[in-house]
Length: 453
Ligand SMILES: Nc1ncnc2c1ncn2[C@@H]1O[C@H](COP(=O)(O)OP(=O)(O)OP(=O)(O)O)[C@@H](O)[C@H]1O
Picture 1 (cartoon, protein in one colour):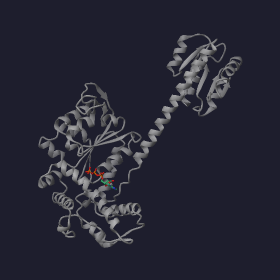
Picture 2 (cartoon, protein in one colour):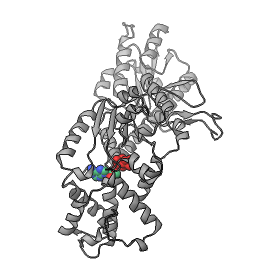
Picture 3 (cartoon, helix red, strand yellow):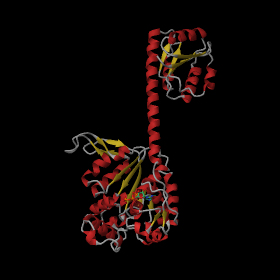
């Protein structure tokens, strides 16, 4: 069969006998009588298994030399299976070698069939180890591809620069981070940036949006469940905590967590373990937590809606993202960025923005922040005829804007308009805007996402 075996023994006749025996089974055999050659061998991972003598000097039988060379090989290729050969039947030594990482040992004089069988299982083990190593490498590559595929953070205002300095500093630690800011300011983007610059960047970044899942499913979403825990639990399922194990867990809209779940979250963070719904067996977890919200958690604590001890736990570092209207010319930088992006996407080539259009962008209050700007620019690129983006191409949906005749509006456009103006009136405060519109905070949140506000 295909396979590359290395034999190391200073007794030439043993070496020849082994070489002869193995030639019938494996495609490539390398036989060396001087173990010092191992030092110069470089990368040994191309071998599939090694047969290594335990005692190299005939008069010395401590086995130390064999153990020394075993360590050297393991240092060069940790996955490579090594079988030790010993002539003295010294069990202590054989066990010592197993502890040092040898997969098995054979005693001299050996039985040919037994030796071949031992080597075959070592060979199989080596193949599996190689596969696992390659899979892990693929997985790490995929993760870093996913993590690095994110868009850059645009912004040169002092507010953004200061924020990014904190982001870079905190990324290197494992501190829990709370990101606050209005809707669409880039909280998720910043959370991913922290993960990308952290030592966990080759591990998973798992996000849960508490604003978009039904409250009754929060617990199972976070902690998982076992089969039969509730009517719809047809299979065991792991939660986001376990999915993020070793990596970063991003809890968006953490202010939506009910009080009992806040307690469960707190105890998971304190004990570093989760208990699946329907189970009582704790599972150890190691996550870095980043939470985000556009609610005022201090106010929620004062009103008895959020646990103070949980707030302390999640906001070791607090990052506040400024709203777009406070970022000065960043509006234009971001607009240029999105014009380029959507110009390419819709085959419009290089588009230039007219100064009146710039003024229109700068004068607007952007209640939906960067998400709203992004959607506005996408629409304007689609509408734009020619190579200059005019102010008429930019449709702002603020209620005070008279561009659209209400009689010609669809119900959906009116709804979007009302939501935008309510958010603008309340400076992006969701609770107040939802109250004014007579809908729940969650409904408002879902609608702003749908309308791209
Ligand atoms: N500084 C930035 N540079 C470029 N794009 C950005 C920036 N900030 C945000 N974006 C983009 O704006 C959109 C909204 O950002 P994101 O989803 O991170 O906001 P959010 O604050 O998490 O929103 P929500 O409050 O609705 O959860 C995304 O498409 C994101 O890529």
